[in-house]
Length: 120
Image (cartoon, rainbow, N blue to C red; front, side, top):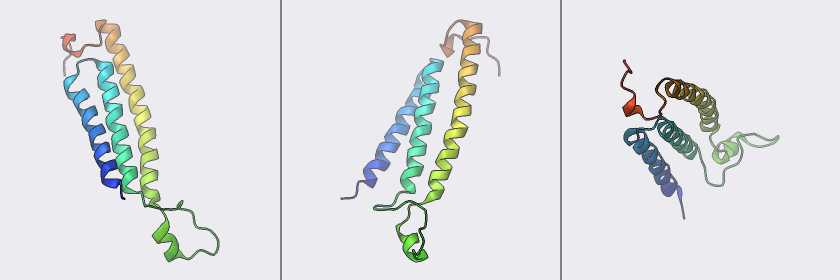
């Protein structure tokens, strides 16, 4: 039985939970956590796209035919994109936390609806 459609659905549900948190919550920390949930859902979805049932690591061994390798190996591009996304996401999270701390220092709250002096 193939469980891939179930895995895609779970990734989409995870994304929807994060989107709900971003749209409906007023606390800056909860918004940051919701953005992290959304990021992890997208990373999971990208990894699922590159998955191949009974796949092998994308490393050729000596004596292996190229056509045999291509039909059995998982897609390494998805893995490379996700590892790059994780590194970029880490720096973005550090920036979001720094901004949240500065907002707390100024307004003494994480509630974004109470921050009246913010100007775009």
